[in-house]
Amino acid sequence: MVPRRRRAIRGEIERLDDVERERLYRPTLIPVRLAVVSGDLARAQRLLDELLRWLTEHGQPAYAAVADAETGTLIDLLAGDAAAAERRVRAGIDVFADVGETGWRCTLLCYRADALILLGDLDEAERCVVEARAIGSTSDVAFEIGWRRALARVNSLRGEHGEAEPFGREALAVALETEAMLEQAETYACLAEVLARAGMTDEAREGREPWARPLRAERGPAYAAYINRRLDALVGEPA
Image (cartoon, rainbow, N blue to C red):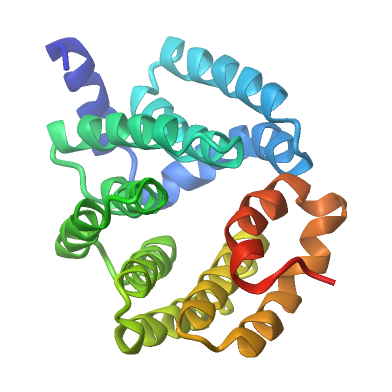
């Protein structure tokens, strides 16, 4: 990273605490997120590109980096391009590692683990979780859900079902304490995957129902399709 950009990102991080960043920056992502949820991924990427330019031009490079790494990665995943998602989130991780930031980086490491799992690199996914847990805060709900979800999938895919299920259930318990519909859906789906691989297909189908119908409606068709691509082969298509 060039020294000027490093100084700008470090200065932005030092100037604003986590609460202030959330208050100032999260609303700017609302149009992008709405496009993502509606399934118009091309429009979502276009809006994100416009937002990234605006943030960079107005002295907010740190938030530009995290917006691209978080929301841009989600766009890639919903489009079915896990390799592009991994590249994008890794770039964001590198930005924050370069300036010693940990709050955003721990969550991005969990997102990278998700992409790596889809790519079949379970060892590197597990390494990302280990790094995230070393720097993360228990007050960060997205991180607390993300690392458990990633370990549940890693252990499940390795056939370590006894290790996987508790992580999946813990992740769901945390997610259900929030009002984040998409986080809840992803975590229900994670547990369904874990149960299905452990041979508990009926229970996996039951766990799919709380989120399957709402997401198939207008609130999240693209997200539903992303999740269903993983689940259909394991538990069959939802009724």
